[in-house]
Length: 504
Image (cartoon, rainbow, N blue to C red; front, side, top):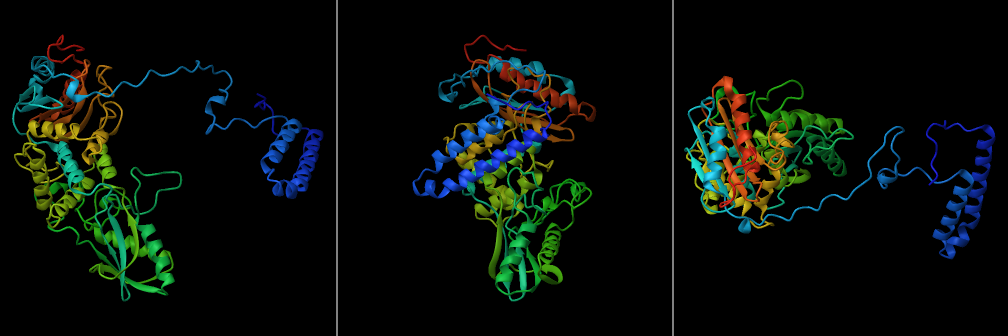
């Protein structure tokens, strides 16, 4: 294959350039002259191939290979030698939970006691480890503060009770001269579209686009001026959970409303705004005016009744769950909790959402939480046993492949690789890195980890490891101890009748 020499300048000699230009003009004339005949005789492709052949002969060969379509043909930079390509090892067959064997209680106990017996972990340590089905092979301790492992409960309830593929729409409706922005509980509604060359994950709607679409529709209706209202009444009850510490207000989490932008964060600076719906309406009004509609007065609360003008929609619910589990998103989880409340017959309050979660767990046969007050785990008054988390994970693992709750498995962060576990498991055995998938939970004095792993001898396990009396000086140590315990489960030979724990 002939390639251009990258060391040569793009400027050729005048004679070469002149000859190339002359031939290019002649080739163009030939193409134009043959155009009518080839078109009528369906000879466009043969004619093009002939011209391309002439072009190659005259101008010196083929174009450089396109890295997007033929990356293997692109030569390496000068001085860099690359090994020959080899075929990868075949992908392992999927593990069949029903035929993979059972975990040995003795082996599991030895693995965990070695790593969770330190006094620095505090006086309250609760653990449960089970196979894909059946009672726990090892369990110790009772209900503790779960922190963000609570998000597993909310996620499963959302996927169980909300129709698969559901999106959450933010709309505008017109009644007289009032244009009302109606919040539909989109947890990721943004202030503006993604910057060029960037894409949010999951894909997200934005209120500036809603304003532009609304302006276009208003123009078609001959509407040149409006008053802007906003409706955030989809959810009921207090916007700030009374079971959260007051110090969280305006800092840790925004008031939970059906209408907001950027999850209640200000355009600049830190913290959260006091009234996310009002701020979202102000952003909308400014964008609407920018789009050419005259806005009279300031936005004010209004009922969202009237003719629909425009709409933007969130990502599907399963994508929302995937994201909130990956990054432990408190705001998105609390919005989903409100949707669970609506989907289970309530009015969309925190209380309705929790009741919906509890009913879903009961239907799945999962042990009920001792106390549950929110969806994200920010409340220190929540009490959940490891048996609840393990039972929930067993329900997910055992679900049919097309069951919506299976999305939870894809959302679990991967040890040393993704989400909230990207920078953890630094000292884990190689067999565990990339194999442990788990949801983290962290508050001051609280550390938990709940997820799945397959042992070295092929036994799938679900586990929940929980601490809630860790001293401030030992929080980093506690987190590393949970990572070590989960990693050791992945590295051990824990099958009943096997050779016992291994892999350190």
